Length: 132
Image (cartoon, rainbow, N blue to C red; front, side, top):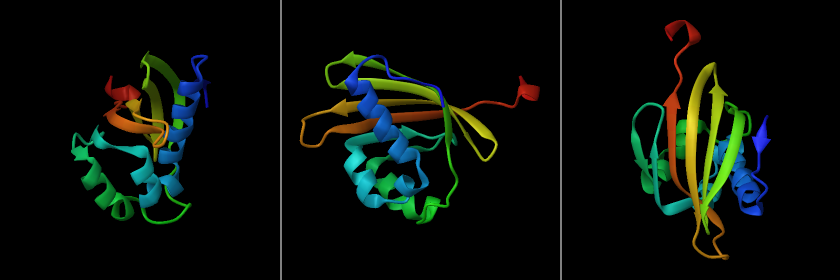
């Protein structure tokens, strides 16, 4: 995986947390997701569906199963930018079961106790090369 941490510890921390959420174990752990998703979290998935924190938490076990053997996202080109103190924007691509998506996440750190939490995420499907 190609990762650019932007020379900032904040970006490195956020990338670590993004990777936790993408792992099969992370996607099936309600406790971890509650810790890493901001109370005001919103996602626009690759399907176009809009998720808020509660709908995402409710769907996690149903969507992904509850083990480490689930589908594995393969990220590439991950880069991060500090937009302002306490705000980091990540961009990257993933492959999952032969489907490619461009992804964008905004993370915010409200206080040191909660740490970094994902505030917004969007996934946009990338068409097959033959469809371009």
